Image (cartoon, rainbow, N blue to C red; front, side, top):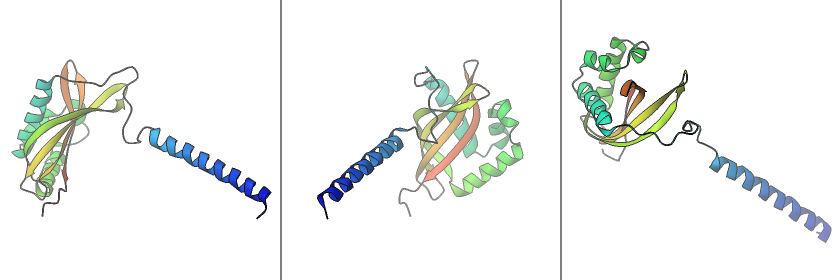
Length: 166
C-alpha cells in the first residue's frame, strides 16, 4: 500500500474513533430515560421519617390483611378516581398469589417521579422481606404527593426480586 493511502486511512480511523468517543460520552452522560430529573433549583427532597414510616406501616398492614376497603380509603381522593375498590381488590389478591405478604421493610430512598399538572410526585422506595410466595425479598414503592404537610398516597407498587431461592 502506498504511503499516501496509508496516511489517509489513518486519518479516517482517527475520525471514526473521535466520533465513537463522542457518541459513547453522550450515551453515558445523558439522563436515564426512566428517571426524571429533579425539579429545577430543588435539592433532593426529604420528608419527615415518622410520616413516611406511618404511611408504609399502614399500607403494608392493610395489604397483608387484605383489608381492601381500608386500603382503598388510604389513597388520595384523586388517586381513587383512577380505579375502583373492586379493581384494587383484584390486584391485591393477584399480588398475594404471585408475591405473598410483606414480612418486614426498611426505607431506602426518595425519588422524584415527575410532574402532573405542575404538581410534583415522589416515590418512596422500601426494601422488603417477603413470605408466602416464591420471592424472599423485593421492593415496595409508594407514590406520593405532598398536600398540606401530609403525604397523600397516589400509588402502591410491590415487586419481588429473584435472589436464587428455589
